[in-house]
Length: 197
Image 1 (cartoon, rainbow, N blue to C red):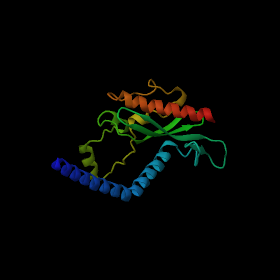
Image 2 (cartoon, one colour):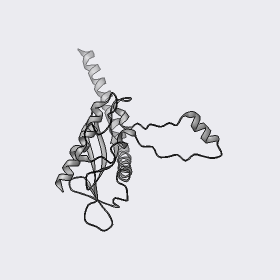
Image 3 (cartoon, rainbow, N blue to C red):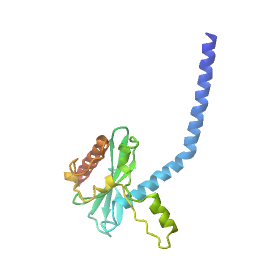
Image 4 (cartoon, one colour):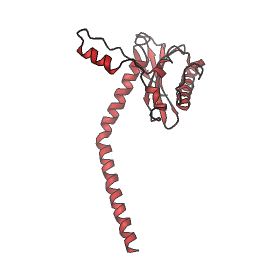
């Protein structure tokens, strides 16, 4: 009985020290984590809503942004964050839509889907190889790198949010649940915003 009490006390102390260290690390790194989230969100805002549609954002009480052009008061579009549970985590996307419901861009903000399957929602397809990269390094005439976006989210551009369904986009092979979660969250949140105006 004495050994059980001794091991219980040691285990408690080890857990207390580990929890204290984790709490300390979290407290120290929390401001930096929040800054990184804010920067990611600002970058995503610029990506999903082109400046030719609107150049001024106004955050609403409901948590989405209205997009205005110049000094006008009529929204030209909306930007919102859509969330839904996929296969193994909540998938959070930022979406831009015009006032008529046409999607202008989609960016995945966070997910924890299965690597190699659901995580392909952020995968970038490129034809660049190691050989091409090395040739570009040693070449006198440098090729300009073009911005490549994830192929899954790129296919949403130009689709009306009211008609968005799994037939509108190509789902990721082996990750239908993750693909459906993104599509459904965007459609539901988009319709809610369009119907509220």
